[in-house]
Length: 80
Figure: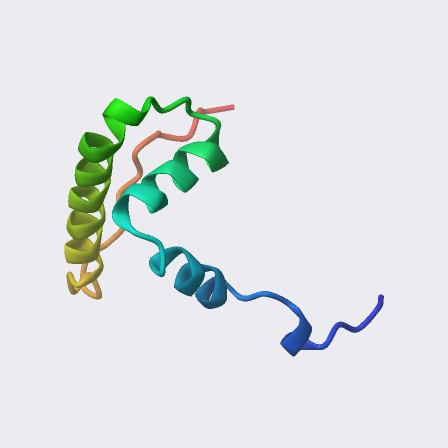
C-alpha cells in the first residue's frame, strides 16, 4: 500500500470552503451539475432558497443532544 501525505489529499473542509465562497445561485448551479439535475436559469433562485432552508434545518438537527436516545430498528430483520 502506498503512503500518501495528508497535506496532498484535498479535505472535505477545503472543498466546503471553496463551495461556500460561491454565491447562493452559484452553489445551487454547482450542486445541480454535480448530481446531474438539469436546472433552468428561471429555477435557480427558488431552488437556492429551498436548498438554503434545508441546510438550516439540517444544522438544527445536528445541534440536538441524542446521547441518551436509543436507535430504533426501522426494518425488522427477516427470520431465517
